[in-house]
Image (cartoon, rainbow, N blue to C red; front, side, top):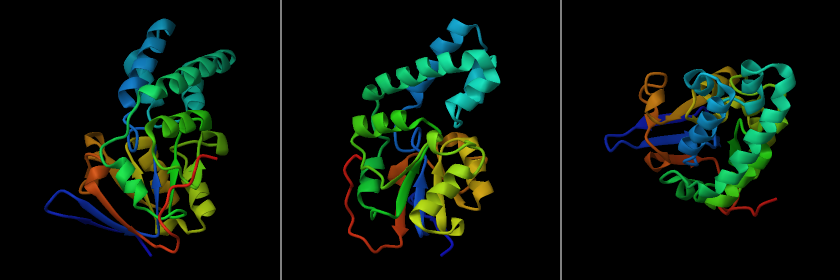
Length: 225
């Protein structure tokens, strides 16, 4: 079933697909202001241009972004610091409007979280916000090439047992949109920055999305692995 997306007069997007694949930061979790604070402080301490850092990091695995910003010998130490900060400050984060309700209404095995973050960071985000735990969680630790390469989304589809054409991806970053496009999946945008890239299929928050996915299991949230 190729995903179908209808934009309604009430501002809602009504989506029919086999499965839904969600980015985490900026899609389900209101994490971007805190992430920006972390990287602003780090950029200042390193004497790096903030705008360049933000553009390089957004939507990409931190290790890959740091490889574009720093000498290779310095990447590991800075990655450790930034990962620890992201885990520590996950306790301050909350869900985006409608995120918890949207996921709670979906059947287990019909959706996944696909993030450019490390697995430890993703687990901290999910635990602190109380979001339902996905049966399939794909992180930067699971693939050799991060977004904008399609690997993470293709892996999520394979783990859910569906073809890429049956997937709809919900993203907030251009790198993630490009990854979904390369994977052959339908794209939905969260946040105004993607309105030009995904005209007609961008909403303000998960509260503006209604999903109808193929079913077969009882809707419930698995416990944390």
